Amino acid sequence: MLSSMLKEHQAKQAKRKEEQEVRRKDAIESANELTNALVDHLNTGVAQAYLNQKRLDAEAKQLHTGATTFAKQTQQWMQLIENFSGALKELGDVENWARSIETDMQIITGTLENAYKTSRQAGSS
Image 1 (cartoon, one colour):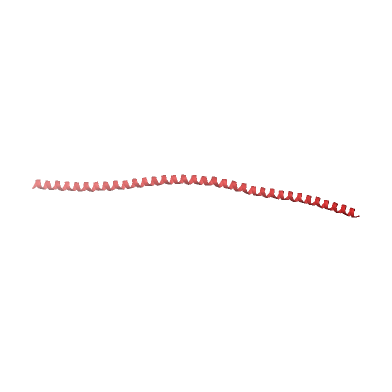
Image 2 (tube, rainbow, N blue to C red):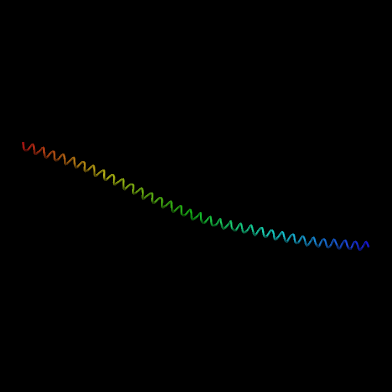
């Protein structure tokens, strides 16, 4: 009887060990599946972040190029405006010069007329 109880106990222990081994394998397999699922999920997020960063870098480069072009165009416009302003200033200077010459010519004409009148009056007297 004792030996049958011992055999029965050993059989139960062997069965429990088998069940524990099956549960351990299931737990390891479940842990591996969970780990793979988490890694896949993280990889998807990392891949998306990488693509977003790549897109942002391209847009930043394009923006920098646009800003550089805009700065060059602005500089050209500023140069044109400065040249135009200088030309207007020169026109104003020419106008003033022409007025000065006109005034001088009027003075000379008046002086010559007075001299002619005076010399005629001196010649008739």
